[in-house]
Length: 118
Image (cartoon, rainbow, N blue to C red; front, side):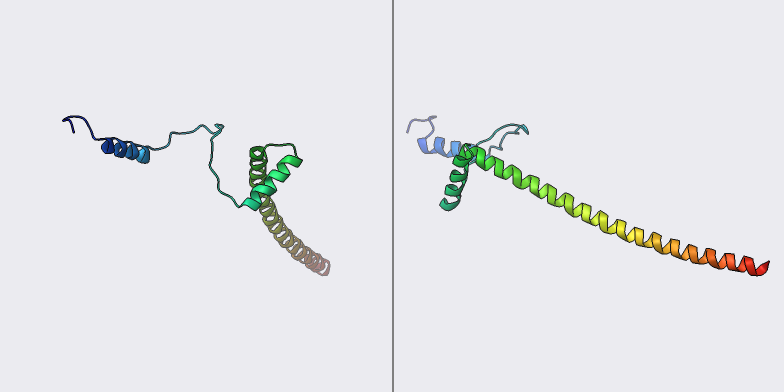
C-alpha cells in the first residue's frame, strides 16, 4: 500500500462511523418525511382495500387514519375532563343545596324565635 493513501477498508469504516454518529437535522413541523414501516400483510391488505374504496392512495389512507387516531385521543381526553368537571359541579351543587337547606332551617328557627319574643 502506498504511503499516505488510506486503505479502502479505512475509508468505508470512516464513512460508516460518520453516518452512524451524524445527528439527524432539525425538521420543520410541516415538513413531509419518508418513513419505512413494517406491518402485517393482513393490515396492509385491509388498508389498501379501504384506500381503493375511498379513492385515496395507501399513503393518504394511512395518514388519515393516524391523524384520526390522535383526534380521537384528544376528544377522549376532553370528554374525560368534561366528566370530571361535571362530577365536581354536581358535588358543589349538592354542597350549595345543603347550605341553602341549613340556612333555610336557621332562618325559619330565627323567625320562630322572633315571633315568640314578641
